[in-house]
Length: 148
Ligand SMILES: [Ca+2]
Image 1 (cartoon, rainbow, N blue to C red):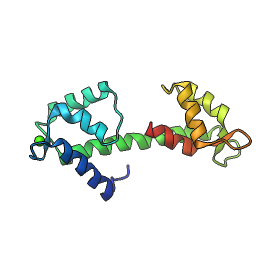
Image 2 (cartoon, rainbow, N blue to C red; image 1 turned 180 degrees about the vertical axis):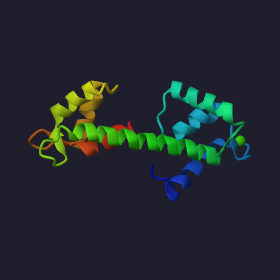
Image 3 (cartoon, rainbow, N blue to C red; image 1 turned 90 degrees about the vertical axis):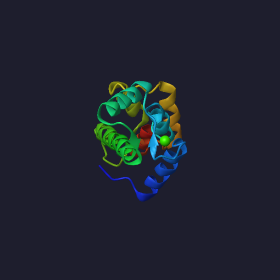
Image 4 (spheres, rainbow, N blue to C red; image 1 turned 135 degrees about the vertical axis):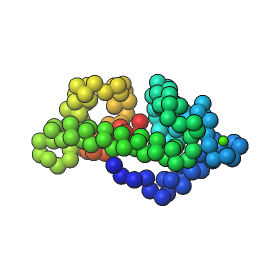
């Protein structure tokens, strides 16, 4: 898992400070969800609930270091998901050149049981762009998918 860069940490510190109204270096538990989302992560409400429950069991407060750890975990999970998806799509890449048929990719997504709706996938395929053979750079596609 790659470490957060200094630049990322500085940005996260800025976000953290915005939520630290009384400037005591800590965030209230009920603010944690909003803070995580403001930091550019997209957990579901259930995930946020779980995170808060976990935190409450082990911690009495959320300080910046614990917040960083949390974001690091999110980023790690993203990287893992990215690797898994690229691996799955690479099996479709017969010529091994980084491109797969958009239709194959679409089919693979259904088989992976991804929760992405069809029109979102269509939109992402459009954004990444198909070549004249109807092929798409699947690594770029996965990067975009991870950001959603
Ligand atoms: Ca505070």
